[in-house]
Amino acid sequence: MMGQRIPIKTRAEIEAMRESGRHVAEILLILRDAAKPGVTTAELDIIAAKEIEARGLTSSFLGYDPGGLPPYPAVVCVSVNDEIVHGIPGKRVLEQGDLLSIDFGIHYQGFHGDSACTIPVGQVSEEARDLMETTHDALYKGIEQMVPGKRLSDIGHAVQTRAEAAGYGVVRQFVGHGIGRVMHELPQIPNYGRPNRGPRLVSGMVFAIEPMINAGSEGVRMLDDEWTAVTADGELSAHFEHTVLITDDGPEVLTRVEGSH
Ligand code: MF3
Ligand code: CO
Image (cartoon, rainbow, N blue to C red; front, top):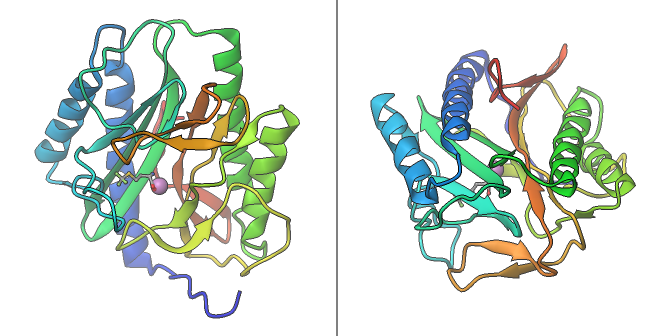
């Protein structure tokens, strides 16, 4: 694709992104542990906001304005069951058996980190577990493609192939993205597509890869809050995301610490 200039990070920038990624990973682990039956989604937001404050970070999400929408009102996105992405924290009480997606991003020393995971609240159905595991696996199939010399569309192709092999629907309406000094940099990274298209991948590029996979069809419907995306058919959805650096030695997941997804 002509004219797409994908930022290449310097060594110093990469060091800063490792730090912001580590904070994201650590806080996501805290949120995962806190997400138990009886806890409200607003309580998860408060826990995340306290960590942001204590660590001297800034939220990437709070006040985020993609244009034409009300600014995003919280520091995490919490999407339950048929909610795909961008669920707004509130009074909803988590229940045993819920499938919960938590999406979290911060800004630190000039750079953003962005990651998401889907977790079971207590015990979930076999169907929910399979969707969750498949989506996680699809994320890593995409990450595996992040080596110099591969092309951009190889990532989405690998994600789509894994998800569709399991009979699931790949959400088209939301995509992964370059990430750095701004949360959404070039390029956009769809979770589907034909292989061997688009720019060559180069060491020093950093992408947030984030498949959203539906148990049923890929169709999306928006709620009246203008942010929450739900499955059109009411079936479950899962979402995993990592911020990943391309290096000559292969992909380096910046938003992972011991115990992370
Ligand atoms: N991971 C999501 C994305 O890249 C997070 C955005 S949440 C928002 O779109 F609140 F900032 F919109
Ligand atoms: Co993202």
